[in-house]
Length: 122
Image (cartoon, rainbow, N blue to C red; front, side, top):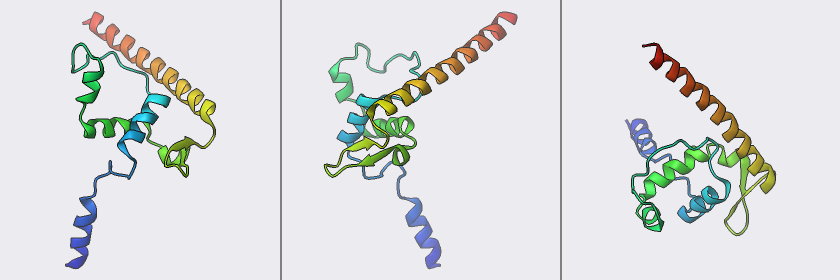
């Protein structure tokens, strides 16, 4: 009976809570950007501006961070000051992310064209 109790306690631990400070998440997202190309989506806060960023929910930013950095432990290392730095250097990480965005953009473009052709045939 005790073993099932331990499992349920472990299951309750959130995946998004890995001990990375929120400010550090925001810094990494601002500096390095996503690995996927940006989709053309309407912002939930029309007009944008700094007020829209301030009103963003913390849990939403955390989810976005872990989508943008799925391999954080493999590609980044924490320094003595508590900041995460790329293992292979800043420029290598920037080039890696730029290449990933370009590849994802090509895939997205093919997907859009394929769906447009299907709509025209109907």
